[in-house]
Length: 172
Image (tube, rainbow, N blue to C red; front, top):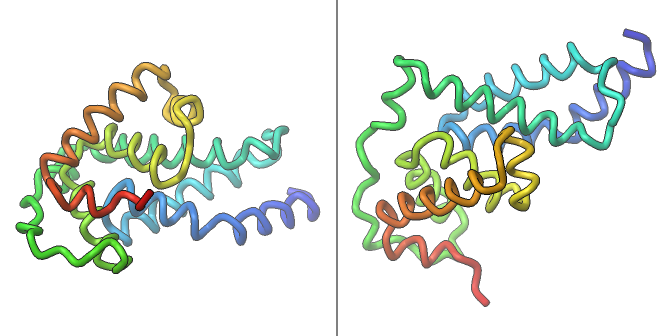
C-alpha cells in the first residue's frame, strides 16, 4: 500500500475504532469478543482499502462487515450459549435512567436475550441511529425485514425488561 493510502487508513482507524468497538459490544455483549470482531472488521477493511472508491461509504461498509461477523458467529454451536444464557435478574429496583451506567447494564442484559438478528437491528436503529433504509443496507436485507425484526426485537426486549424498558426511553 502506498504511503498516503496507509495514512488515510490509520486516520480512519483512529477516528472510528471506539465507535466500532462499542457497536460490536452491543451486538455480542462481551468486550473481549467485541475487540475481536472490531479488529477483524478493520483487518478486512485494510485488505480492501485500495478497492473502496467511495470513502463516504466506509462506515456503512464497516457496519455491514461487523454485523455479518457477529450474526454469523452467533450461529455457531459453541456460541449459542450466549443467546440462551440465564435471563437477567429481576430488575424491580433498577435505578433511574439518569444513572447511565445502570441503564447501560440493564439494556445490555436485556439485549442478551434477544436473538442475534433482532439484536443487530435494534442496535443499528436505536443505538447507532440508522434509519430503516440504512439498517437494511447494513444487514443486506429489505426494509420490510428491518421493520418486522425491529417489532419482534422490541417485543422480546419488553418481555425481558418490562417496566425497565420505559425507564430507558428518553424523556419527552
